[in-house]
Amino acid sequence: MSDRFSGVVLRPAKDSETPVRPTMGEIGLNHFAPYLMNRVIARWNANLADELRAQDITTAKMRALAVLSVSSSMTINELAVFAVTEQSTMSRTLDSLEEQGFIRRVPRAEDMRVRDVSLTEEGRAAFEQAWPVMYDSFLRMFDGVDEDEYRAFTATLHKILLNIRKHAI
Image 1 (cartoon, rainbow, N blue to C red):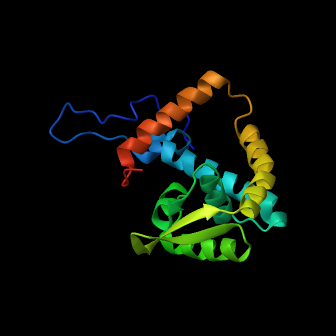
Image 2: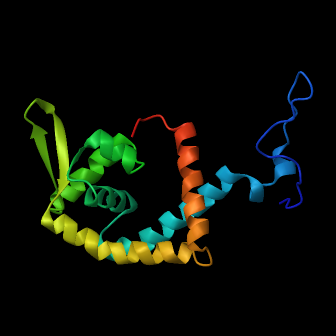
């Protein structure tokens, strides 16, 4: 993998009618942010899945519990967006969480087709048990990164998210 590319990665040269774009080989995987982000998140998910398996918490369950822990309630569609999970996967995940007694789904009075999902006390307790595992994994991931670097990194991620998002949330 090339670590020597010194060209401009983010902007193709525009000095001709056809922009000249660097090749993947010139940029190299180690300088192509989407590749690096995929590696980081895949490792994060695999590590958490291993660590939370004993608590019967899957990655999808962990995401749902985490999102619901900071929201009073939300719809399945909203939850799927925030938990970065397909709606069909989220529906199955919520079925399992409901069987475990961790969430409740309540139809909205103004539209019985829409269900609001919220944590139960048992669900909040399950998340509070999972949180130390998540936070410790987070700290390991950012070992050697100082607070200013972290804040700059998250600010950059927010800019990227605005550029690519499909949902207003």
